[in-house]
Length: 264
Ligand SMILES: [Zn+2]
Ligand SMILES: [Zn+2]
Ligand SMILES: [Zn+2]
Image (cartoon, rainbow, N blue to C red; front, side, top):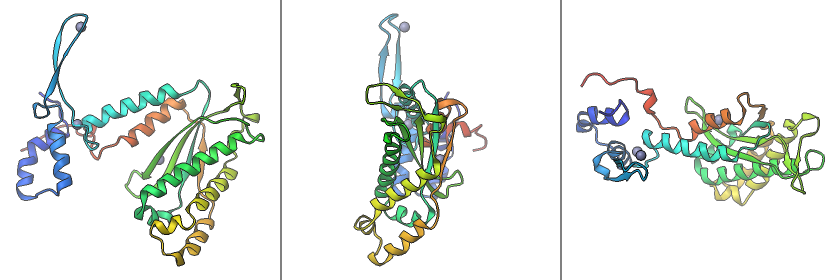
């Protein structure tokens, strides 16, 4: 028997629900994927152990990004890959936030705005690490995009897991002077400057902003410091990665949230 999960809920209550409420095409496709995942419907293959000769039959996965079974596996694979990249040095956790005055543009052209966000944060971190006043080397960091708060309001920010130091020109590891790696206020200014410079026309107009509105949007963007937040991760880089992975591979209802199935 399968343990209680989203697929079992859909199997149990689905037919009655679908009889009165037809799904849009996209929703129907996700539904089919989730209910077929790792069942005979998707076929399977036989795995054999070279050592003991035991065989077992394995059903194929749907790989749909809304499927709780598949996302749990994808998260584990993502985490394992990130853990292999982690260096044996202290890490810092920074969060770079886009002001909400840009939310309208994000809705109109998310792809472009997210690309600009990644590029301006990466350029900011690289510039500070390269500066002889700070480290004078090449930084090491992972960036993870978050676009919503837990209560599903749009809040675009980038988490940066940054190694405390930089790779020097002769392959040596440069430690931060005075233990002070992140002049947060200065970084916030540089990040904002780079982002706005990259967003300036013609880019912003290609995203759908009428030319006459750029001056107003730009002054709104400069009206406040952009939030950059830094802290030393308490549980080390592993704990931060675990937290980021949960968000990155989140599904609307994970199987852990389903405690049991009752009724008919
Ligand atoms: Zn075996
Ligand atoms: Zn699946
Ligand atoms: Zn976040």
